[in-house]
Amino acid sequence: MVEIFQGMKLRIGMDRSISWAPNKFAGNHGAQFKVIDDDGLVDIVLKKRPNGSNIKLNRDGEVIIFEDSKPVKIGKISSPPKINFEKLEPNPTNMVSGMMWVGPFDGEYHHFCESRFWLTNINRKRCHYKEVPNELKNKLERFKPTGGSFVVTPWGHVIALIEPQPLPKESRSQWENMSKEEKRLLQIKKAGAKMLPIYICQWKNDWKIELDDPIDYNKPLSQNERDDMMSFLSQFGMKTSSKDNINTTPSEPADVEEDFTDDDSFFTDINDNIMITPSDDDDDNSKLPKSKEE
Image 1 (tube, one colour):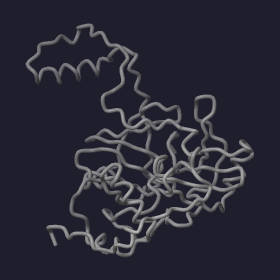
Image 2: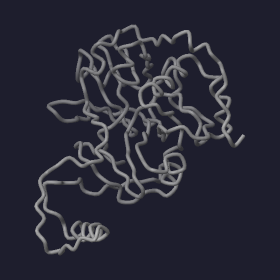
Image 3: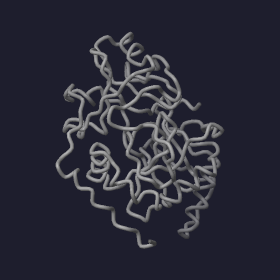
């Protein structure tokens, strides 16, 4: 498996509790979920950090902490993991592409634009896929035609946030059958990103992703990069010689995604009473509006 720094954020307490929150803001306002460990995760973490710690759990079952300004792997549990959420289902069955995702929206963050797919490796460097699985690309482009980000959970579910668009008929009855906690998770995403989390597909074991070397903007342009820029600039009627020395200074690429720096204060202010408290509005079982196609 590709060594990825990203993973599901969990908080392990010195009292052996495990909790998850959709984000720091939501966690501080009651959206906290208790996680049940049947895989030895707590023992791995408390052996290294007796007072508890934030960790990341990736798709390979690796347990990662942030230490001395770098990610460190401290152990490994099962893949997929044998942990469960009290109020959520992290590993649902019978899912169809386009159905609303009401499990934990967390895991490895990947990004894509047209044929370019990339992620952050274990050393927190951006790396592009050497080859993109066509099935993955096609299923993502069905709902995100202009590109964007997607998440692979520790259980191998590919999920993503999308803008308003018609959804498959299988999603029509979901809202009425959701628990208060599941409705609240959707509302949190709507309030923050103003987008809907959906299921894309299951990550297949034969998608053996290999990565190019990390991008290094401190190096001079390679011949391929110069030729590519020549082709691009020619569209603007600019005459440029491929032999020109182009001065470059290190800069942040324009399409840098969210900074996923591990933050030990992520759960600092979270109350240990790990329970989400939905509002009265969650009792509203009104149906979702039908799509124009129905």
